[in-house]
Length: 409
Image (cartoon, one colour):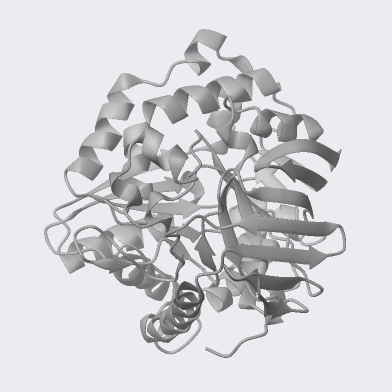
């Protein structure tokens, strides 16, 4: 079977787990048109009632960000907001085919970027709530656009760079295996074993130690570890990310202390942030250093009044994951976060705490659940990373040693 067809089937049957008579929203770069046509055909063969495709074009995005008046950037179109919210309310699954150019907006003024972030985040709050509370089934899969491939393999001609990136994507996503869907069932079971182990342990804190990192993360009472397949509110399982190698939970928004150093670049709104260190006090970033992209990091931390400078996610990923084995910096969070333990600035997933989906803003704050208009993962793991779990009685137990699990599930 053609690998693109297998990849499309994996995205639809394992990713969003599309059901008969369900709608599908596909968001994709125009360069992926061949693959999108395969996805749409497969979706209708599954029984989709409708497939709506929204195209993304980097050149048009750049031109708008460079030249549009500020009042345009500060306003998110109501018609688009209504359409996106309307589709998820109507039960549509959402498939994001992702291949962002990491350097697309590197010369765009930070105030213009901030305006777009604020406008879209406010307008699409209800839409994001559907995603982060698993009310809608969604998935993100990678697509090797030319600019992204050339960023990773700058010494290769464009066609060779794309071919090489395709091979890595197919390997990492297990598409090159005889039955990718069955391979993902087995992989999801391993991630389920890991999260069930951590849920049983119910650690009060995690302590991360590596070069440049000495960070203690308190976990809120009632926290839940997730990873691999998730279950939507309609009781249908799905995989939000392909690939995924993580198990993740939420930090207590007021309980993070110490210093942490990034181990891979963070691509934020078309700008790269590299080699940065954050210092936390009582949950909030109190100081930072940055070798490249300091203005973008400042913009991220100041995206809202408070939440963007606190943590919303902590994720454990063994250093020997298939993504890490590639030995490549992907400049793409979907892939890089699955090569390394990571944390996220911004909004926490309400599903990572008991009853979180039913909490109001005040209740979430009381339980230590962070809220923000952003959610940005950045990588902190390495082959030297040690992680201890600290119990409510103060006992320390090894979870990771030298970047690998120190426990048997």
